[in-house]
Amino acid sequence: MKFTPQSIPEVILIEPKVHGDDRGYFSETFRQDLFEEAIGYKVNFIQDNESKSKKGVLRGLHYQLPPHAQAKLVRVIEGSVLDVAVDIRKSSPTYGQHVAAELTSTNKHQLFVPHGFAHGFVVLSDSATFAYKVDNYYAPKYDRGIAFNDPKLDIDWRLTTKEFQLSDKDAKLSNLCDQNQLFT
Figure 1 (spheres, rainbow, N blue to C red):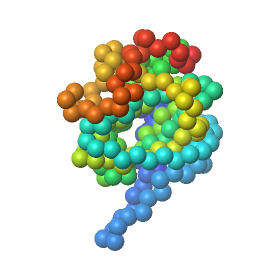
Figure 2 (figure 1 turned 180 degrees about the horizontal axis):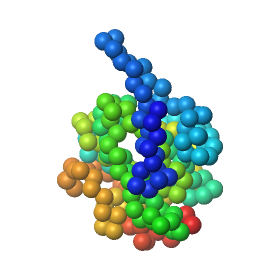
Figure 3 (figure 1 turned 90 degrees about the vertical axis):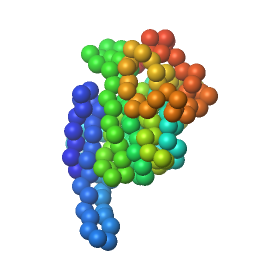
């Protein structure tokens, strides 16, 4: 596995080794010891989630407040998404900046999104199956989100506004500057 820190170094792109031949392929998608060595601390993933979405579905930008913050290890099983992590740690030199990576079933890349980041993705292919590990359970009272189209974030989602499909919840999210509870 190759672990590459992104422009915000706490966000790590992971490229698993894929062994393939005319019969198919094999890939080790997660290994705790290598993962913890690469990020420099222990993470205890406690739940795996999976979603399937159509082209243009945009989910996010979501986060949970402490003590229920979630770190995520995300990947695509089928299709292609643009995955985005936004630094929402007020004391961070990269506060308000983001990392974007295209994750596909072909490249098999994964993205580690640590605590202190809002996370979202948009489906670029006709459909996509998205899988992720989290290190904390969903806690509705601590659930928050940031508008995907916050002009200060300046995220290029690679699709036109007409192509986006949002949940009612995500369509009502406010900009980062309007968030009254963030990470310190």
